[in-house]
Image (cartoon, rainbow, N blue to C red):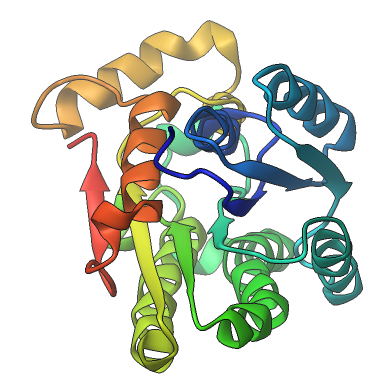
Length: 258
Protein backbone atom coordinates (compact mmCIF):
# COMPACT_ATOMS: atom_id res chain seq x y z
CA UNK A 1 0.00 0.00 0.00
CA UNK A 2 1.13 3.52 -0.77
CA UNK A 3 1.21 6.45 1.62
CA UNK A 4 -1.29 8.35 -0.54
CA UNK A 5 -3.73 5.57 -1.46
CA UNK A 6 -7.01 6.99 -2.75
CA UNK A 7 -5.95 10.63 -2.46
CA UNK A 8 -6.92 13.09 -5.20
CA UNK A 9 -4.17 15.61 -5.91
CA UNK A 10 -4.08 18.68 -8.14
CA UNK A 11 -0.63 19.70 -9.35
CA UNK A 12 -0.44 23.00 -11.21
CA UNK A 13 2.42 23.23 -13.67
CA UNK A 14 2.60 19.45 -13.49
CA UNK A 15 3.52 18.83 -17.12
CA UNK A 16 7.28 19.05 -16.56
CA UNK A 17 10.05 19.82 -14.11
CA UNK A 18 9.31 19.93 -10.40
CA UNK A 19 5.56 19.59 -10.95
CA UNK A 20 5.97 16.45 -13.02
CA UNK A 21 8.29 15.00 -10.39
CA UNK A 22 5.67 15.59 -7.70
CA UNK A 23 2.85 14.20 -9.86
CA UNK A 24 4.72 10.96 -10.64
CA UNK A 25 5.94 10.44 -7.07
CA UNK A 26 2.41 10.96 -5.73
CA UNK A 27 0.97 8.48 -8.24
CA UNK A 28 3.56 5.89 -7.21
CA UNK A 29 2.26 6.29 -3.65
CA UNK A 30 -1.31 5.54 -4.76
CA UNK A 31 -2.79 8.95 -5.59
CA UNK A 32 -4.90 10.00 -8.56
CA UNK A 33 -3.59 13.16 -10.22
CA UNK A 34 -4.99 16.21 -11.97
CA UNK A 35 -2.35 18.02 -14.01
CA UNK A 36 -3.37 21.64 -14.46
CA UNK A 37 -1.00 23.23 -16.95
CA UNK A 38 -1.00 25.72 -19.79
CA UNK A 39 1.15 23.21 -21.73
CA UNK A 40 -1.71 20.79 -22.29
CA UNK A 41 0.09 18.46 -24.74
CA UNK A 42 2.94 17.88 -22.29
CA UNK A 43 0.41 17.55 -19.47
CA UNK A 44 -1.34 14.77 -21.34
CA UNK A 45 1.97 12.95 -21.84
CA UNK A 46 2.59 13.10 -18.10
CA UNK A 47 -0.97 11.90 -17.50
CA UNK A 48 -0.28 8.87 -19.70
CA UNK A 49 2.80 8.05 -17.62
CA UNK A 50 0.65 8.18 -14.50
CA UNK A 51 -2.00 5.91 -16.02
CA UNK A 52 0.77 3.46 -16.87
CA UNK A 53 1.43 3.27 -13.13
CA UNK A 54 -2.14 2.10 -12.62
CA UNK A 55 -3.52 5.38 -11.31
CA UNK A 56 -6.14 7.75 -12.71
CA UNK A 57 -4.97 11.00 -14.24
CA UNK A 58 -6.55 13.97 -15.98
CA UNK A 59 -4.82 16.78 -17.84
CA UNK A 60 -6.65 20.11 -17.87
CA UNK A 61 -5.45 23.13 -19.81
CA UNK A 62 -5.21 25.82 -17.14
CA UNK A 63 -3.70 29.28 -17.06
CA UNK A 64 -3.54 29.90 -13.31
CA UNK A 65 -3.69 33.65 -13.95
CA UNK A 66 -7.23 33.32 -15.30
CA UNK A 67 -10.03 32.96 -12.76
CA UNK A 68 -12.46 31.27 -15.15
CA UNK A 69 -9.91 28.65 -16.21
CA UNK A 70 -9.03 27.79 -12.62
CA UNK A 71 -12.68 27.58 -11.64
CA UNK A 72 -13.37 25.25 -14.57
CA UNK A 73 -10.39 23.05 -13.72
CA UNK A 74 -11.66 22.62 -10.17
CA UNK A 75 -15.19 21.94 -11.40
CA UNK A 76 -13.91 19.17 -13.70
CA UNK A 77 -11.89 17.69 -10.85
CA UNK A 78 -14.89 17.47 -8.54
CA UNK A 79 -17.07 16.15 -11.34
CA UNK A 80 -14.62 13.33 -12.15
CA UNK A 81 -13.08 12.50 -8.77
CA UNK A 82 -15.59 13.83 -6.22
CA UNK A 83 -13.03 15.39 -3.87
CA UNK A 84 -9.69 17.19 -3.60
CA UNK A 85 -7.27 16.06 -0.90
CA UNK A 86 -4.13 17.98 -1.86
CA UNK A 87 -3.43 21.11 -3.89
CA UNK A 88 0.15 21.58 -5.07
CA UNK A 89 0.63 25.11 -6.36
CA UNK A 90 3.71 24.65 -8.50
CA UNK A 91 3.03 26.69 -11.65
CA UNK A 92 5.52 29.51 -11.94
CA UNK A 93 7.66 31.65 -14.17
CA UNK A 94 10.62 33.97 -14.12
CA UNK A 95 10.86 36.94 -16.44
CA UNK A 96 12.91 37.79 -18.40
CA UNK A 97 14.76 34.69 -19.62
CA UNK A 98 18.07 36.29 -20.56
CA UNK A 99 21.62 35.10 -19.90
CA UNK A 100 22.83 38.70 -19.66
CA UNK A 101 20.67 39.18 -16.56
CA UNK A 102 23.09 36.93 -14.71
CA UNK A 103 26.08 39.11 -15.45
CA UNK A 104 24.44 42.53 -15.55
CA UNK A 105 22.74 43.42 -12.29
CA UNK A 106 19.85 45.80 -13.07
CA UNK A 107 18.17 48.24 -10.75
CA UNK A 108 14.83 46.98 -9.41
CA UNK A 109 13.40 50.11 -11.03
CA UNK A 110 14.54 48.97 -14.49
CA UNK A 111 12.18 45.99 -14.60
CA UNK A 112 9.64 46.19 -17.40
CA UNK A 113 6.09 46.52 -16.10
CA UNK A 114 4.98 43.59 -18.25
CA UNK A 115 7.70 41.36 -16.73
CA UNK A 116 6.61 42.36 -13.23
CA UNK A 117 2.94 41.65 -14.00
CA UNK A 118 3.61 38.27 -15.64
CA UNK A 119 5.77 37.08 -12.74
CA UNK A 120 3.50 38.25 -9.93
CA UNK A 121 0.31 37.12 -11.67
CA UNK A 122 1.66 33.62 -12.31
CA UNK A 123 3.62 32.99 -9.13
CA UNK A 124 1.36 34.67 -6.57
CA UNK A 125 -2.06 35.48 -8.01
CA UNK A 126 -2.18 31.97 -9.46
CA UNK A 127 -1.88 30.48 -5.97
CA UNK A 128 -4.58 32.79 -4.66
CA UNK A 129 -6.98 31.78 -7.44
CA UNK A 130 -6.35 28.05 -7.03
CA UNK A 131 -6.90 28.30 -3.28
CA UNK A 132 -10.02 30.40 -3.82
CA UNK A 133 -11.72 27.60 -5.74
CA UNK A 134 -10.20 24.55 -4.02
CA UNK A 135 -10.44 25.50 -0.35
CA UNK A 136 -14.28 25.48 -0.17
CA UNK A 137 -14.20 21.77 -1.08
CA UNK A 138 -11.53 21.06 1.54
CA UNK A 139 -13.54 22.94 4.15
CA UNK A 140 -16.57 20.82 3.33
CA UNK A 141 -14.45 17.67 3.76
CA UNK A 142 -12.87 19.12 6.93
CA UNK A 143 -9.50 18.02 5.63
CA UNK A 144 -6.92 18.93 3.04
CA UNK A 145 -3.32 19.89 2.39
CA UNK A 146 -1.91 22.80 0.43
CA UNK A 147 1.71 22.75 -0.72
CA UNK A 148 3.03 25.90 -2.37
CA UNK A 149 6.31 25.84 -4.26
CA UNK A 150 8.26 28.94 -3.28
CA UNK A 151 12.04 29.36 -3.57
CA UNK A 152 15.08 30.27 -1.54
CA UNK A 153 14.76 33.54 -3.48
CA UNK A 154 11.65 34.18 -1.38
CA UNK A 155 13.77 34.37 1.78
CA UNK A 156 16.34 36.88 0.61
CA UNK A 157 16.67 39.68 -1.91
CA UNK A 158 17.67 38.88 -5.47
CA UNK A 159 19.34 41.65 -7.48
CA UNK A 160 19.14 39.61 -10.69
CA UNK A 161 15.39 38.85 -10.68
CA UNK A 162 13.87 41.02 -7.94
CA UNK A 163 10.34 40.51 -9.29
CA UNK A 164 10.76 36.73 -8.92
CA UNK A 165 12.13 37.10 -5.40
CA UNK A 166 9.25 39.39 -4.46
CA UNK A 167 6.68 36.93 -5.79
CA UNK A 168 8.19 33.98 -3.94
CA UNK A 169 8.41 35.96 -0.72
CA UNK A 170 4.70 36.63 -1.12
CA UNK A 171 4.12 32.89 -1.53
CA UNK A 172 5.72 32.20 1.86
CA UNK A 173 3.73 34.91 3.61
CA UNK A 174 0.46 33.84 1.98
CA UNK A 175 1.14 30.21 2.92
CA UNK A 176 1.54 31.17 6.57
CA UNK A 177 -1.68 33.19 6.43
CA UNK A 178 -3.52 30.24 4.88
CA UNK A 179 -2.27 27.93 7.62
CA UNK A 180 -3.55 30.26 10.32
CA UNK A 181 -6.93 30.70 8.65
CA UNK A 182 -7.52 27.06 7.71
CA UNK A 183 -6.07 25.13 10.64
CA UNK A 184 -9.42 24.98 12.42
CA UNK A 185 -10.87 23.30 9.32
CA UNK A 186 -8.32 20.46 9.37
CA UNK A 187 -6.31 21.93 6.49
CA UNK A 188 -2.53 22.40 6.54
CA UNK A 189 -0.50 24.74 4.34
CA UNK A 190 3.26 24.61 3.78
CA UNK A 191 5.77 26.05 1.35
CA UNK A 192 8.75 24.25 -0.17
CA UNK A 193 11.72 26.48 -0.98
CA UNK A 194 14.16 24.84 -3.42
CA UNK A 195 17.59 26.26 -4.11
CA UNK A 196 18.78 25.35 -7.63
CA UNK A 197 17.09 22.80 -9.91
CA UNK A 198 18.03 22.31 -13.56
CA UNK A 199 14.54 22.46 -15.09
CA UNK A 200 13.16 23.91 -18.30
CA UNK A 201 12.27 27.08 -16.43
CA UNK A 202 15.85 27.52 -15.26
CA UNK A 203 17.22 26.68 -18.72
CA UNK A 204 15.23 29.53 -20.21
CA UNK A 205 16.45 31.79 -17.41
CA UNK A 206 20.14 31.18 -18.18
CA UNK A 207 19.87 31.10 -21.94
CA UNK A 208 19.47 27.43 -22.76
CA UNK A 209 21.04 24.01 -22.42
CA UNK A 210 24.43 25.23 -23.63
CA UNK A 211 24.78 27.36 -20.51
CA UNK A 212 24.74 24.52 -17.97
CA UNK A 213 28.24 25.60 -16.96
CA UNK A 214 26.82 28.93 -15.77
CA UNK A 215 24.26 27.07 -13.67
CA UNK A 216 26.92 24.74 -12.23
CA UNK A 217 29.11 27.66 -11.20
CA UNK A 218 26.18 29.35 -9.43
CA UNK A 219 25.35 26.12 -7.58
CA UNK A 220 28.95 25.68 -6.39
CA UNK A 221 29.22 29.25 -5.19
CA UNK A 222 25.81 29.62 -3.52
CA UNK A 223 24.98 26.30 -1.86
CA UNK A 224 26.39 24.66 1.26
CA UNK A 225 26.59 21.17 -0.27
CA UNK A 226 27.88 22.46 -3.63
CA UNK A 227 25.29 20.49 -5.59
CA UNK A 228 21.91 21.03 -7.23
CA UNK A 229 18.76 19.41 -6.01
CA UNK A 230 16.35 17.48 -8.27
CA UNK A 231 12.61 17.29 -8.94
CA UNK A 232 12.67 13.80 -7.44
CA UNK A 233 14.10 15.00 -4.11
CA UNK A 234 11.62 17.86 -3.95
CA UNK A 235 8.85 15.39 -4.75
CA UNK A 236 9.93 13.17 -1.86
CA UNK A 237 9.53 16.09 0.53
CA UNK A 238 6.15 16.95 -0.97
CA UNK A 239 4.92 13.36 -0.58
CA UNK A 240 6.02 13.38 3.06
CA UNK A 241 3.99 16.55 3.70
CA UNK A 242 0.97 15.03 1.90
CA UNK A 243 1.10 11.82 3.92
CA UNK A 244 -0.04 11.16 7.48
CA UNK A 245 3.56 11.72 8.58
CA UNK A 246 3.12 15.39 7.69
CA UNK A 247 -0.20 15.91 9.46
CA UNK A 248 1.28 18.01 12.26
CA UNK A 249 3.39 20.25 10.03
CA UNK A 250 1.86 23.52 8.91
CA UNK A 251 2.79 27.18 8.28
CA UNK A 252 6.37 26.15 7.40
CA UNK A 253 8.67 27.30 4.60
CA UNK A 254 11.09 24.40 4.19
CA UNK A 255 14.40 24.81 2.38
CA UNK A 256 15.71 21.98 0.20
CA UNK A 257 18.95 21.78 -1.73
CA UNK A 258 20.95 24.15 0.44
